[in-house]
Image 1 (cartoon, rainbow, N blue to C red):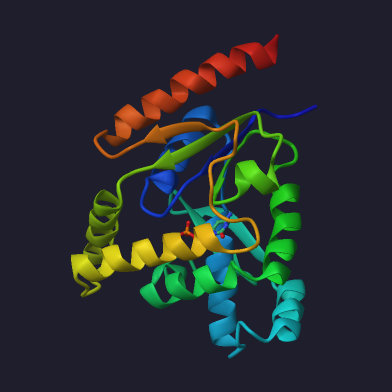
Image 2 (cartoon, helix red, strand yellow):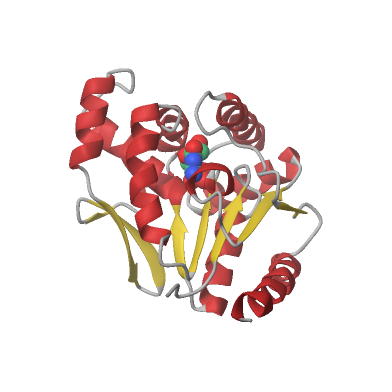
Length: 228
Ligand code: DC
């Protein structure tokens, strides 16, 4: 018996996926799964172990050995790499860029795909990423594709980095976001794209609360049918 719906949320960086997914998971009392954090953790691990992302044998070995998990701590979701809290470490600009490269590797995608499916198989999850509705859970109960104009996404990511004390210009952040989108959308395996049956939502001129309300309206409708 499934514990609830599988809600898939895909879209480019800075569209608001994490913010919205966390709020939705809390309101629905669902588990929140951030698959981007898993690719980031793999990227951090390659840095720590000094593994080139082009060395597929070592990359595969590393993927088989590492343990990535989520836990709740201090009221927020924490990311653990082999038991160590890496929540902040995986958000640096260098890890962001490397994560995009790592996520284009089939060995990495195959390894994480298995873990992600296992995490979400019982339902009652909000799972966000780039290929959730297309590859990880093609039969998800609801698929959303959340987008926003790249200028707006750059501004949001810039504000986040400045708040964390990183010294970086808006121009650089926006350029990096556009570059990452291009990498993520043009790669061979599981490229970023809306699933054919996804519900597309644009967050550019909407507040967080407005976007959450839009999602909830749709989720409530589907939940009613699911319970019948
Ligand atoms: O959402 P994010 O910025 O934390 O994701 C980090 C990188 O991982 C990003 O370049 C896209 C990639 N990614 C992916 O390829 N597939 C996913 N399901 C999630 C993220």
